[in-house]
Every structure is written in C-alpha cells, then in structure tokens.
Length: 127
Image 1: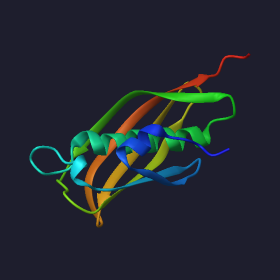
Image 2: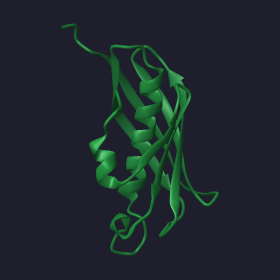
Image 3: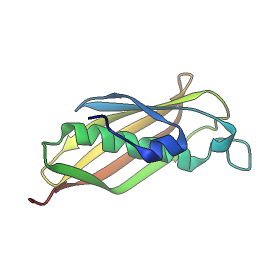
Image 4: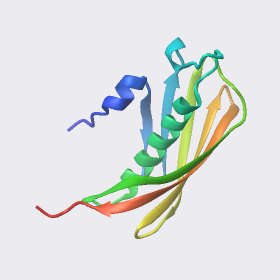
C-alpha cells in the first residue's frame, strides 16, 4: 500500500529516498515558498528537515512503533530563491525511547541550513 502524505502534497516536496540509515527530501522552490523578502521561508526548510527526520526514524523502527518530534534546532546559513532544495537526514542515535537525527539542507552544493532533532519513540496500543 502506498504511503500518502497530504502535507507533502500541500507544500510540494517529495521523499526521494528512505532507508533505516537516512532519508532524502526534495523541493523545487516556487514563489509560494518565499517570504515577503523574496527568499525561501525558514519554515519551509524546517518542514523538509522535520519530515526527513521522521522518515529516517520510521524506517528504522520495528513494526508497531511510531515517532513524534520532541525538539528540533535549526541554524540557517544562507538564503535561497530558486532551484531545488535537497535535505539529507541521517540517524545519529537510536535508543529505546528517543532518537537523535541530523539534517543538512543544500542547494546547488551549498549548505543553506543544518538541523538537529530529538524524537520520542512510541508503541502503538494493542487492539
């Protein structure tokens, strides 16, 4: 069964690769992604990182488990206006209750931002 992701459809990004070790999300920038200053809105980059982190972690979890964001810290280094942003996320640490992940957001080989996140690992209740 194909995974549906309504929020990804809304923003316009895609998950191009996902394994238990990493996840890659990509977004072709459009005018709707820009802030009033004409550069990509920081929330757009945060969205790519958060989704990449969740994707990488979900691929590493056993069946019946899911995750939720506890916190994400993101540092922005340079603005972007056009092109395709690529967010590469890697799983840094996987514990029993929490996991740590790191995302690097790039455009044409230049780093736009880097994010570090902590996620809670939860078990779905039995039916």
